[in-house]
Image 1 (cartoon, one colour):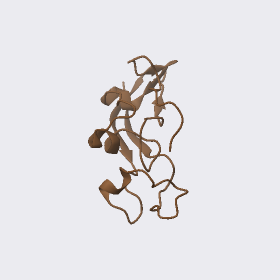
Image 2: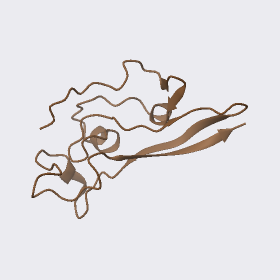
Image 3: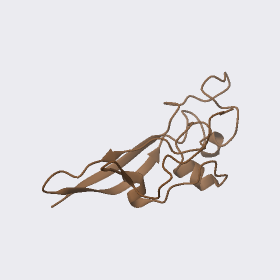
Image 4: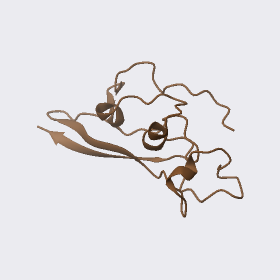
Amino acid sequence: ALREPIEPASSSSSSSFRGFTDAWLELHPEPEPGSTDKAVRFNALTFPSCNPVKRIDYILFHAAAGGGVKATACIVVGQVPAGGEKDEDLRDGLGMADLDSPIWASDHRGVVADLSRVV
């Protein structure tokens, strides 16, 4: 069982982190940590991969001088373990150390973003 606090990464609703922008927050609301909504857990939360309760994986970008960058897409990937099924990841007892657990690529789900230059 996960024993660390499940707090948002930032208490602010802003997508800015010391001059860097969070690609996820440019396009989506911050998901509620510990959400029981299956769609939120499957599509927005990233840790742990086997039973996600929070979003702790980010793609941060900084606007270049004389131009800018914007996120045009941002998704979570790696929701389904090798040989697994979509709903299999939404139950306890699937940690990477469990012998009956399916194979996960990582203990975190991945985040993929498309970025475009704005001139």
